[in-house]
Length: 465
Image 1 (tube, one colour):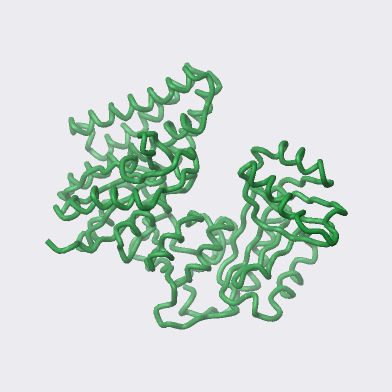
Image 2: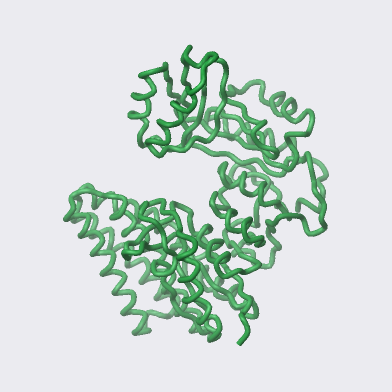
């Protein structure tokens, strides 16, 4: 049999959020049968947050409360299975029972250890995807579509950097192909967990919150597919967050670079790492709304279908909350080399990534979103500089091809924001984005004001809808 062409379909938490949503997802999968779908699923919406809470309760030694909460989570999935009419499937009931045992054992390991480590944490928060990835095949089979569970923990090989594991590409590619290709060739739909992987020792790992998108494009690249579909609860990539701008427009087409910048700077429709496998393997990523499956969504690829390159146009406004600004001042910077290396070696030491950086002769300002090791970082910085911390900040990012080369855009933006305190500004580092830092409290007015300015009036129908 010739190598089958496949498509990877990833469904987010809201897309599998209840029995009705799961039925709708199965109908969407049915519409893709001629394309040989491989399905990647998230946990039921809200379940991962519940599992995070559960893990923390266990880590704090709240055994009785944790076991009770665990039962609530399990009962939630039993109720969904009941609504789907699969609760009388004996094989599935046994699987459901085994998942419950796995979750209970994961909690017991935390109780016995007396503390919550990243490894033990992953063992708990990965269970949500295990429920849905085993539930979907049973529903598909009930709809007369052969389907089976394929365990990502055995296919997606990662390092042991728990809670933010890095995929080992060459090893994973062989495992993914050996597992999934034979299933697809038999006319069966494989369903696997997003967000989850495993080490060579069999330890469960996770790719970081929101990592299901990344799982989908990784698996797509390993299977050499042309298209990966990301199904969520919005009509594609929008010009702004619809919770702040209800009238936000859908973007028909985006470049990899534009979408990657948006994802990194807070656009919630895509995980920041999602686009890397797509870029490296020239795949098209399509973003759809599972609540509105007939809508075209957004296509993300190297170029627009008509080959045009649209420069100088703001395509979307993203933001990232919960940031901390650290300002470091030292006269040692002046006319000296090695200072920046010393500064950033501290952030590297404490595995803390930096978002934006601005510098002057004697001052560096930067933003971080992970304050886990902020005390140690500030202590080390204070040995050679004066360091100040400001919390509750946000990055606003305007994205569009060629913004760096377009005259007047910064003036337009900051002319609109004369009543807003701006802490950092960054443009020259990127061809396609202009970013600045403000107080979190100013976000709603800033996003609405910028969107009204750049997206009011008649828009190019080839770009926006």
